[in-house]
Length: 258
Image (tube, rainbow, N blue to C red; front, top):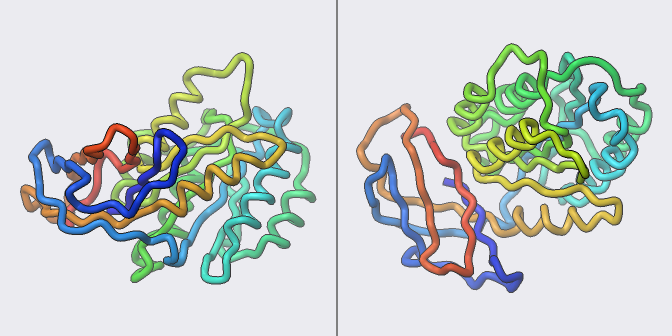
């Protein structure tokens, strides 16, 4: 199970031990077998950028932020995809480099139309990041530039969350700060991050948000534990807590038993 372990007080987290965590699988306490850093493991990711009419006012900062983050994530062993979405998904499902991403985004047409957010996420999960396509590399993530609105997807939030949890893919929404945020849309982004083991980050023009995203990515760990009860190919509820109050753990709320 891929989890993120960060300090609540801003200091570095010392190498965690399995005794530092309490895990409940389907509400049953289970034994933690191991906690191993995957900081140096290759990362395969999809960057999703909302190009619908609802994000017209955020177009330039979103493009600048997406390019900056893609460049920061483009380490030699990492692989990235790009998806633009409005009422449909635009991608060729091929690995792209930072230069290509910058060219595509800077030549993007003015934003318009409806938003198929959930359909875009499901496309990334099932066509780009699926475990079957990326095995044995299990370290995958979605970085989402969106306001959280969706008014045309064929799929629901619940269905999207279950698909992400089955695949073990965390979602990291990057959102524009707003004086009058849409509470419903923010709740959608929060649900996508909290239920998959990701986190929601505020976009800033200085680029400081990139450091926060990288902090989460650099503090990902592979947590292994005893599955209880054994239900193969079915979703289990999951709760992971730290013994220390100074440490925060982000983990999916459900996972597929294998």
